[in-house]
Image 1 (cartoon, rainbow, N blue to C red):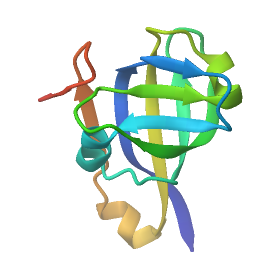
Image 2 (image 1 turned 180 degrees about the horizontal axis):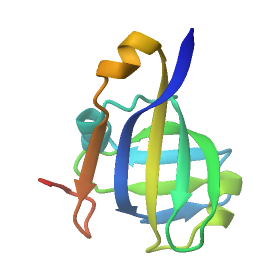
Image 3 (image 1 turned 90 degrees about the vertical axis):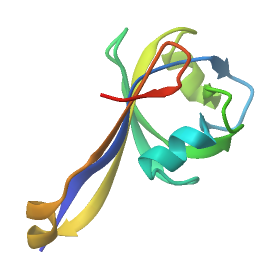
Length: 117
């Protein structure tokens, strides 16, 4: 049996852009992707702390070191610049794998640069 398990998250990143005229997705600074293990094209859940919205989209790699967090396409309507969001990735694991799994949580400052927690 497989279970769907929380694998990684970017906690309280700040939305830096919202681009309604893009086809869809979330663009994330490549440094944050590397730190979290979240992959380009991976499906993620977005949780908006400011307004309670929860939705899914896929990841696009952003400019390294930029702090970029950009919601694109229809998802741009679910955020405002400056909103704090959580980006969550899940994975499928066996029950045994899940029992020993430790998720990755990346915390950031107001500029979306990783800080130690």
